[in-house]
Length: 340
Ligand SMILES: [Zn+2]
Image (cartoon, rainbow, N blue to C red; front, side, top):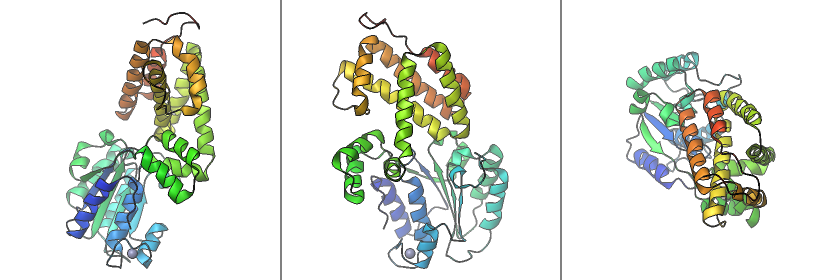
């Protein structure tokens, strides 16, 4: 059973390749974070090793051991799966899997190497992996996962079959939370909206209350920066830059929240306030809308978007974020007309 919510196209492509016995030796699963790429990689690893006719069955010994992370032929690399605190996947880890790739499967039918956050491989590691992808051993499947495809070496991308994942629709996430997790309708609607298509994020909040608390802390801080001095904004830029060097997904999530706040401001000012991402911040945002012009808001949304792109392209994070803070439009006092 695949059951990857909202990713029918991606799953259909993989099932078609499996059923026609034309599986590629390497796949690149790309798309936003927390939309089901890693779960799909595990299902694919199960499918090529499953003992039953209808794969992945989830109940044979192979499927079970892979789901538990205890299968000797399925190796998972990546920042979130390591015991040390190194952010990048280095040359030693890739050399290790290069060696394993040429061995016969130990217990299953196929050796599977999953490289999560593949954009975090060092250049040395990427080049080493490229050599293996250029001359792939038999009975071996590589699955690379990335939320920042543009940071991967073009030569690596050209050696993989790309499977694109999309943000999951709000409606699907809401229904999933209600039907599968018995979440009440209002809370499910709130989580679906805040998740920005990341169904995994919405599910994680159900077992980890810290996630929503962190989001509330971040929006409070970001709202306060609208009234903040340049010095306070530069401190915030340094904070987010430091976070970026340790956990770029988390840092980019803060920029996404930032962009959504400004997007909500524009929506309330120019269009309708029916589709706010941050419904719970309606009152706070209402206090701000008279203090900026629509042009100021639109221009700043473009600045945030450009900053996210430049961070994906490995720009100097501290500098990029300081420039972003410098570009933030200054408010006019309540009651006066905003500067265009
Ligand atoms: Zn199975």
